Structures are given as C-alpha cells and as structure tokens.
Length: 421
Image 1: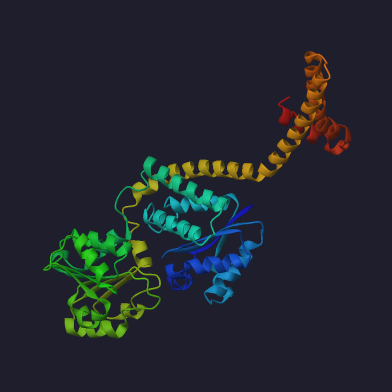
Image 2 (image 1 turned 90 degrees about the vertical axis):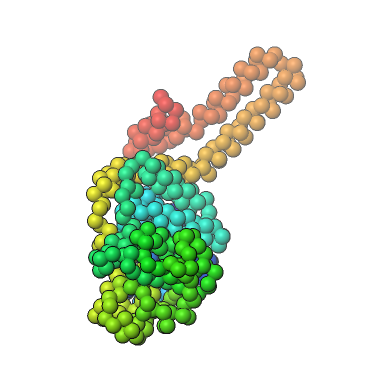
C-alpha cells in the first residue's frame, strides 16, 4: 500500500486561489465518494481549512498524485495549468511526516496553533462517515493526533498567545485608542467567531452584537459570552443593511460561498458614520467581505493572510521549541514506517506460518500413526523432530546450492540474518 498527500496551502498559494479549492462541509461526503468512485485510491480523507486543502490517500497506484491533481482541478472547475504550480505532492515517509507536522501545528500560519488538530479530527470523522477511511489512513490520523499531543505536552510550541483572534484584537487596538469605547459586530457563530469574540469580550467593549442566519446560534454565543441585553444582542443577517453603520469593529467568518458584506453596503454605512473609521476582519475562506472595500477611506480591512503577518510577533518562544518538536516527529515517523513495513509483510508471514503449520500437521499425523502401531515413544519423537528439522531447513539450504555466484554473498548474508548465525 502506498501513502500519498496532495495539497495547496498558505505557503504555496495566495488567498484568491485557496478559496477556490475549499470543500464546504455539506459537500465533503459527496466529494469523498466521487473521489473513490474514480478508483484513484482505496482510502481517502480531505482536510479543508482557510489555510489549506489537502487530500490524503492510501493506494496501490503510484500515479495517484498526478490523477488526483487533475481530479481536484476538475472538481472545482479550475484550469489545471493554473492550479498545478501551487500544488505540493508527498509520498511514503514524506506524506507521514507532513501529516504529523500539520497536526502538531508546525505547518500552520500561526506556529503551534491548536485549531488545526480539531480540524484534522473532523476530516478523519468525515472520511469515516463517508466510508473512505480504512486501516492505513486510520492509523495515520490516529498517530498524528498522538504526536500532536506529545509535542504540545513536552515542548513550548503552544506557549504565548499568538492566534488569529489575538491578532485581531491587537490590530483593532492600533486603530482605536480604547476598545472599551467601541461597538463590535461578529458575523457568524462558528468556532472561529466564538474564539475571537471571547478575546474581544475581555476588552470590555461598549457592546457586542452577533449576526447569524439562525438567531438561535447567535443568541447562544451571546449567552456564552455572559452579556446582558445592554451589552450584547443577536440579530439576523438580513438585518445587516440597517445595522452595519453602528459598529466600529466588524469580524466576519461564515461558510458562505459568496461575499455577504458587499462594497455598496459598506459605502452606505460609512456615509452614516460620517467618516468615523471602521475596522473589519475577514476570517472566512472564501471571503465574506468584498476585497474592494480595502480601497475605501476610513476602512481598515484585514484578511487571514494579513493576520498571518501580524501573528509573527511574539513567536520567539514557540520557534525555540521547533527543533525539539521536529525530533519527536522524526522518531514517530520512523515508528510509523516500521508499522507500515510490517503491515506490508503480513501476507508473506501468513503464508510462511501456513506452510509451517502444514508441515507440522503432516509430521504429527505420521507420529501418531507410528504410536498406534506400537513403536516406542522415544523413537517416534526422535523421528518427528528430525523430519521437521529437515523439512524446515530444506528451503534455505536449497537456495544456497542453487543460487548463482553473483548472488551467493547476498543470499548468505540474508540467511545469516534470518537465523541469527
């Protein structure tokens, strides 16, 4: 079995291309089934986040990576020639090492961030639910999770607060002298918004509003933040046109495939604000806020790529732990490859044992018949042991006598190793 990974991430591609290859949650199950129906792999899992889209495969075909690249471009209706320069392909131990590094946060935009581990667990769960997860990928993902836990518990890779949420608060503090005087709007109610809202709530802004398609989720987030009616409220996305101008800070992260905050809506809000600045953070991929808004006066718009530059501040402690984390990962990669090689040898081991069992059974039956005929037990046991020894030793001794001179040294060394001579 061959392990392989194909992907695109923040190291290899700009945001506008990454957002074109996102697999939305509601379509992930169907995408996995389609991929397997193309017989590109026996097992598959898709990891799709704001910073990366990766396809993990277990296959008998070493040409899978090339075919997977074509499938990915076709699935998202992207010109393959445009996509290919930004793709990376990894196989065998390189694919294993990459999975371990991703899970441990070493390949993230924010070094050591923990969110990616949860996203990998969701990817594994989705693959399992789609019937795409088999023995090999199951083992790969489970060991990835164990490595991530070991790295986080034994190194300082997770030290310091360097998350997208923390970066958003720091940037907002550069625009407004005091965040306690601001009105903050969160668009969406998912995990990233929940985390970011928690960071902003700690700054005690004048008010926090959550806009979401379903009011129940928005109200749930407001309740979790412990906000009362005066400082926290929930609204529907449909109410945004009449509400947007009220907010100094806008943070958006939804699963929408199209922008939900357009240029015209922002221009209208600015007129009502009478040139008071508006700080906007778009954490979504694909983007929620039309990028042209960044050209407007009094609008400070940041995307996930912009935040990636900001979070490099305060990374010294985490960077110091990278070497230690890499050493742990390298050891675990070797362990996984040993398991994989042992797994690959399992059919051969099974045939060897079956052959040995056949020899044992034949000689045992012969010995039992001899005992029934009244032959002495010591004589029967002696004959049994000699027969078994001769039959088990026949294959290696025959190989030595039949092998050519150019292969004799290699065969001799192999037999010495197998029998520990």
